[in-house]
Amino acid sequence: MTVRVGADRASVDALPARLATVLVAVAALAVVAWRLTLGASPEDDGHAVALALRLSRGDIALADELNLQVTGSLLAVPFVWAWDHLVGTTGIVLASRVWFVVVAGAVGLLTARALRTRYAAGPAALASAAALLGLPYQLPLLSYSSVPVLALVLAAASGIALRQTRSLAWAAVLGGATAVGTIASPQLAPAFALALLIGMARVEGTRPRLVATASSLGLLAVAAVGLLITAGPAPIEESVRFLLAVRGDGISPLVRLGRALGTYEGLRFPLYWPLLAGLAVTALGCARPGWRALRVTASAAGMLWATAVTVGAALGVLPQLWFGNTVAALESVLVVTLALPVIAELRWSPRPGDGGDLLAAAVPGLVAATVIAATTGSGPEYSVHGAALGGLLLVLVVQWSTSARSLWAAPRPTTARMRAAIALSAVPTLGMALGFLALPFHEPGSLGVDTRITAGPWAGLVTTDNGAARLATLTRTVDDATRGGRSILILGAAGGYLAANGPMATPALWLEDYGAANQKALDWFQRTGRAPDVVLVTSIAEKNAGGEAAWVQHDPLRAWIQTAYPVRHVIPGLGTLLERQ
Image 1 (cartoon, rainbow, N blue to C red):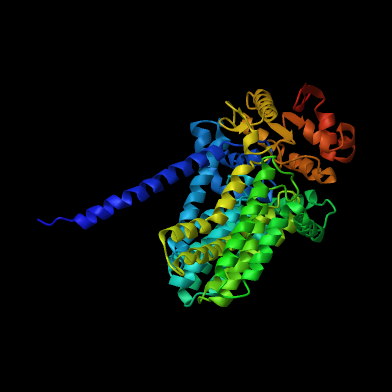
Image 2: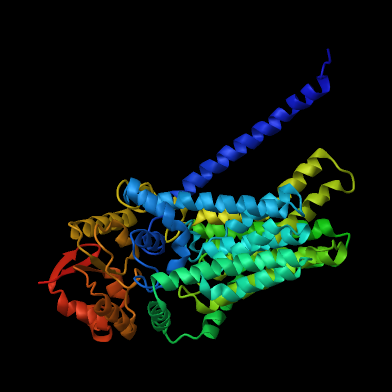
């Protein structure tokens, strides 16, 4: 009889580590569950889900919804359809957030697996998590803003795996990621085309290139043919014209880009001097190959300070001085901070392929960030352009974390040194996690929300007293106004359609004061014959338009509503409900 004492002892010794892993996983799931419940708004939050709900109920993208953003919600449609049929719209926003976590989790696992073809498991996992936390507007929903981020990250990782393995499977993943990203956000087509071309250029062999090309162009062709069959060329053209018209605010792309870059001027304030000092010391540490510990620790200190300032400002403890203190803004600072030591490693301790990995992620990311900064209507406040750097952040973190973990091996490896190096390697991921946790969309910070919504589309979410009251009024008003299947048009609260019992009678869910451009909305009503039975005009939209009288004067849609819907019901705290005589 053989006694396996050594094996049994090793198994016993491994129990604490396994238990710690389980506890960390459980804690992480609890934190994610908590964060998913934070924040609720009828704007971007409800809009993304309402787009998917509209498509799931039979309306056609780019024919009924004249909004190019609608294609970003296609991945959410199957889940939203199932939820609507099984449950209704109660809790549909929270459920959609959970669905996003499922999809993003699958992308994260695939991304980490791709990175592991070249990098160690620990840095690969940390990099994947950090890159996927940089969500525009901090909204964990499948939408035109989040799906491109997932696609850019997956394209960067699969490009690395493709070069390393020449696997046809990774070629298909690269092609699929670039196609899905293009479909979700057509304006980013140049960035995804570059990601595909660079990925193919880096791999040897004809077959992987053919598979990558075929999978990308094939998916794009299916999407294009599907849209042409369901919508037709004329409505698609009208969607583009409508988008250009409502964005015709007189601000040129160059001015928008300049505003985005101008926000970085906020780094000159004394509160950010420690960050700048950390960058200076990091640059000093890049001067000699043997100064790896200095450049890694200095950059880590800078990232920790930037994270502390961002989180403190988001929670209201520190003044808000830059970017709106979003996780996307923090991401852009982390990219700059990480770039210095990573580039130094490429110079002093080059490993074949590392420089190519970095460049392959940087070019599409910078192009995407530039396009978003030059075209987004949200302005520089949310710094959504920073989220486009997800693929670049992925490669920077995996290479920086690899360097940080190597510190424990020299000069004398010890357990304490190893643990310290592992903790140090997690700093960028910790920063992105805290940045995401601290500030829900349109809220005063994670600790400033205290009222749980118990009914309606936003059930299960926690917001402020005023926010909960506004959503309750909006839900009740829309629900009552559309009983019997009456159709509705809502100006200024796109998420309100989630409570509608009847059709969404609008050419675009996000409709407000677009001035003369709203003539296209009137054209849509005339062409389709889908004039609404009731109209809800929110007080916020009216205020932004300069008041009712001014709005009627310069907006043909609002003028038509004023004439065609003379019966008025003022809803305190919400706006005015208008009906036909």
